[in-house]
Image (spheres, helix red, strand yellow):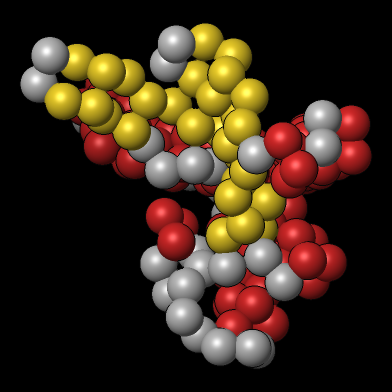
Length: 173
């Protein structure tokens, strides 16, 4: 642990990051459903490489575990909440702002998707990035703000663990 940093001192930062992600996620989903009416429109082209495309994801990341049956959304919500609880324990032990913010972003995204599962029985996905190349069409899975926050949070944790902490250990030795 860094000198002068108390255990739990990054909890407020993590909670703030989680609340920002949760608010942005739920606001964007509300907008695509209630203002844009994307469910009826199905797709809006924003850029040659970016569409808003309505998808109800009944599985987890990238649609995996899509066929869990009628109670699948409840089971996935319960697992997600258990992960959020574990992230809360990790947040209390966070040793720097990057880790605290990343954990908060992941938890906020997970809670945003849990809210969808409870409300709709599926997650609202709508961001579709794609590109046409001479070698073929490349298309990413349709995702949402919560998914983006989860991926960015995990990436920040990996970068912190692999590069930033290693550099800190090298300079303090």
